[in-house]
Every structure is written in structure tokens, then in C-alpha cells.
Image 1 (cartoon, rainbow, N blue to C red):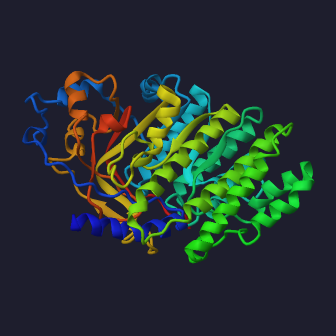
Image 2: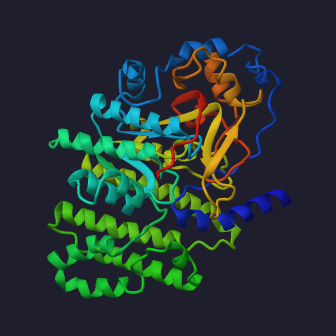
Length: 456
């Protein structure tokens, strides 16, 4: 119990700072259940090896790089089926292959399955900045836009510059069917004056009688362009500001009428302010409230994706850490309910979560989630008690499989909790405790990964 309290206390201090930097929290390492000796040998508890069954289910990957033939992704397309939202995870926040595979799959989904939105575990306001560039080309080039919107985040990487460049080029070639970028998270809000103007300009143009009251409610709250400074305000003041942001949302909501899509967007932007300020009432000294805040964050991410889907009609590829896209958490004590679980509740089988695992390799992370620099870390081969150890014995080593339709022996193995690599913004970090089939409908396993490419 003492160890648990100490671990949560350290995490409590990390939560505020990491969210402020726009980085995803490093997943808490759950205490892994002792491995079944039969499982460490690559067999099920009944003594039957799952390896042959896993090989029967596995579809080899030709490449993780975008471009070229997508014939090897056809089976993945069948697994996704008619899903409206696909959650695509990552086992680290800084590996090249996870990021390039996301671009490769997104391209395939756009060109073959009618998807039009890439959603990222990034603040709503930053997502709008990127999408404005994709639709208009204004604001510089892909690199400068990415550098501004993704600054200090795990995705301030060359791989995401490549993704944004491809999306902008696609829009030039398909002006009647453009692709979009959205941020669904609360991190690194950068709620600057331009973002608040998306709300106040609508009210000024359509309901000028309400503008004075709206400006009054937002006084002292805008802009939030320095999250560290904002979080340095006394807790009582942050709670008052969150209450005023909620009142502003209710005021905008009361103006519903014939505003149509313009009203919907103004209300959603006001909702983002209310969501962010509510999350920023976190008290790192009150450990008992941390699970509630984490649950709120994942619920907000799911709500924002659902809102986007309902108001645009777009099919969405949702990019986030494994622990956010999966249906089950690696540490339910701190992360009681994931974004993936909320989406499955609201969308049913129209939401398909896909997880990543890797056997060995390198990635970018930090010594501490509070401040620090992103740098290279390396993990050697997975050990026998880990999920990745058995997965890497499958022929081809880079492959994907459907956990829902796998043969019985494979499905039984996939439903057992085992240590699984789960890096976020801090390394080294102990493995999570994950039953792959309980979290993901589809699993992508890679033999080797390398660190992502930093932007200059």
C-alpha cells in the first residue's frame, strides 16, 4: 500500500505539468500479474501452444512506410469493415514505425474506405490550426504549421510533417472531397485571442445583444497561452474561472436557433474552453481526485470525436496512445475508463480499436515527464513473460491479426493479462499489464522500431 501511495503521489505531481506541455501522460505501470509458467513458454494454460494459432491469424506487413502498394492492407480493410471511427494506438510516443504506419493506414482508409479525418491526441485548438492550413494553405508551409501546433508534444516530429504535407497535397488534388485534421484532447491548450474570436465573432455577428455578457465572462480567462502560468493561479481562482467558462458555454448554448453549422462550431469551441478550464482545476495535492480527472479527460476526448463525427459525417482515424484507444486500461485504478471504452459505449461495433506492440528497438521519451528534453531510449528483446515475446515468434515478425476472429488457442492466449511495453512521456518505465484481446479488436506487431525523427 505504501508503494502504491508513493507511485500515485509522484504521478499526481506529473499530471498538471505534462498536460500543460501538451504531452500525453506516461501510462502508469500496473503491477503485472505473475506469469503462468506455461505462458512464458508460449503456451496456453491448458498446455497448448498458441503459436500455430497466432500464425494462422497473422497477415504479414510488406512495409510500415507510406506509399507504394497497399495489397497487404486489404485484410486490414476487411477487419475494419464498416467502422466509422478507427482508433490506432502506439506503444511509445516516439517511434518512427508507429508514426509512419499511421500515415500509411490513413492514406489507405482515405483512398479505399472513404475516411476524411485524422484525429490526434492533441488540443482542440491546435487541431483547428492545422485544419485551417489543410483547407486554405494559409499560415506558411506544413513544417511551420506543424512546428507551431505540435510544439513540445510527442508529435513534433518529421513523420507528422510528412503526414500534414500529404494531407495538404491531397486537398489540392481533391478540392471537392478534402481531408481534415482534428485535435480531441485538452493538452497544451494555447487558447489564444484568435481562438476566443471564433466564439465572440459568431456572437457579435448573430447575437450582438449577448456580446457584452460573453466578454464579461471571458475577462481574466483569455488568452490561455501559458499553461504553466495558468496552473500557477490559486486553485480557488481556477475554479472560479472554470465556472465562468461553463456559464459562457451555457450563454452560447442559449442562442441556439437558426444559426446552423456556424452556431454548432461556436458552441463546440466554447465547450472546449469549458472542458479545458475544468480540467485545469486539478489539485495535484489531492491524490484521491486523480482518477476522476483522468476519466474526465478520456471522456472529453471521446465526446469531441463523437461531436466531430455527428456534425461532419466524416469517418475518423483516431490516433492516440494504446491506453487511450483500447477498450481496457492497463491501470484501472488510475485510468478508470478509457476513451476507447467511452467510444464503444456510444458507437458499439462502429468503433474499432487497433493496438501496436514491438519486440525491441528505440524511441524518444524523457527522463522525467516534468520538463526535460526528448532523447533516445533503447529496449532490448522482450523477455519470456511478455506478450511481445510470443508474438515475435510468429513467422514474418511484422504482421497484424484480428483478435475477434483468431482461432480458439490464439484467442485464449490473447485474453490473458501479461506485461506489455507501454511508454509515454517518461522512460524507463515498467510494462503495463494488458490482455490484448480485451483492449483491441486488431493488433499490429512489429519486430523492431527506431526513434522518430526530430524536426529541425
